[in-house]
Length: 213
Image 1: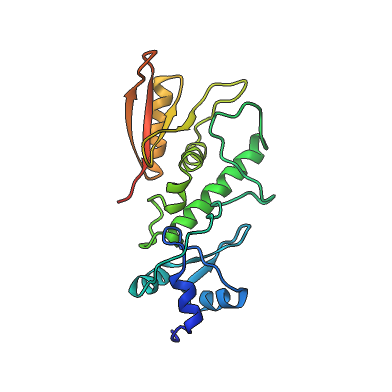
Image 2 (image 1 turned 135 degrees about the vertical axis):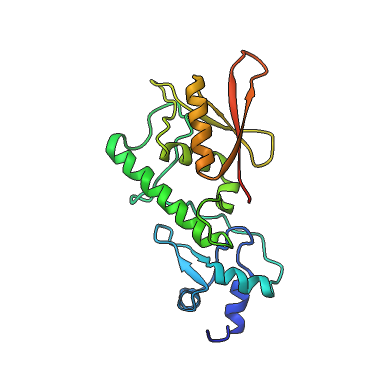
């Protein structure tokens, strides 16, 4: 690999410390892709991120990074608009049936690819920085991709909500079987879970956090 220019090294060192997202001119970023230090996300907005090799180069001599930009979503649908269903929506949103299944599958595949490209060790089975900064959306996508059904105006299902605890969401489901299914789905997606009793009403819920190791 050719030595990096001073401008290229500044771009690498200024990458977002969590996601590895890069900022620079198209020519500079394309050169980093050719050097296999960066990749261009295949979905809009087509942001550039450090590869595992890029993370290593940055860690060898990183300068303090500026405040991070807003990370891009893991995998919007082909229309550019995708939102994981948290079960808290008050009215129907987006596609249904097979079209929705395709959108969810595409979003999950994009998120797994983002894990591979932005986790320093390239692992796909552990949540990445984007998920830790978008907890509710990430947990909801993992649940929907696993076949769990979100609650809606006319149906019962899971509901994902934030909690006062750092890096934790609460997942509620009206049945004990549903609670267990949600916990299993999240664990398979790289989250750690624990089941708790509600303070009022006698119900139960799952507390879930992205696994770090």
